[in-house]
Image 1: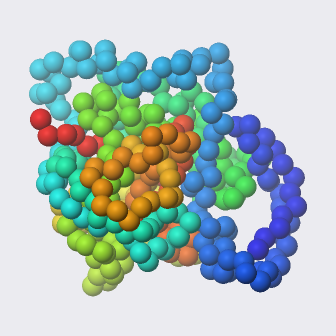
Image 2 (image 1 turned 180 degrees about the horizontal axis):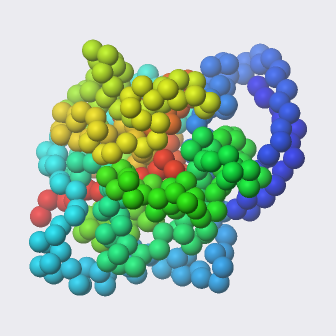
Length: 373
């Protein structure tokens, strides 16, 4: 168990400790095991802690809280699409996932507090899923057509993993996230400037778009005449036809010594050896597809789903579950290039995490689905 004495600063109207002295004490009788405390405490990548206060007012423009940005920006762009857009369709190729029963969740959770269990039998109707995460180029096309402004751009900053920042830029930042001090709020960081001012996506157009909030992802999917997947649809797609397996390709992380996902290798958060070829995001389709022909279902970038977050699930069979009717956080799936078993063992199909809908970070993206006509 950890007790901390800290100096606090305010960020997004949330108390954020910057300098902390940590005192380690033994666990009291009857408390959680040390492994569980580690997994839910210091050994989390802290991605779920990257939350904005929904009460924050961005300058004098509060329009993004007053109406659905997906409706505001996609309607006009869709009206102008016509034959030209079909001719030059930049949207991702869709893969048909046939309707089926599958086993969702697990009875052997890697991180029990995340609500990975119990395993339950779930039916999903047929759905088309994009074969890879939405890329910078695709999102740029959407922005150019619609004039959409992301929430990170409106707030003026976004969270960036500190190891991706220059020493000069890090020296200008005096705040950090309490649970994960390697996450820094960087002014000017957004989808087109992933590491803040001076950074660019010009050589990363085929990488997944990052720093997109749930609302941003919704806006893109509506513009593309698609939608975000439910958590059940996403997990069904991740498993690629396999039952009760950890990863989209099976139970071994490195089959025949080959990397199947962009993950962290080394000692998190100080050393990433890049054995898989990447220390940041990778181009989409860089690793083998799963049994359904879908790429990077785990690793690379976290992916938003449509569902509200809950950790309470029943073992009963369900058809097309959509999660709770309301909530404060949305479910994200798949993990990212920052995931390592010692710190964020969430690159499994059953694993899950959450963020507030307006959160954005340098490892958070999405992909869309479409219903059969």
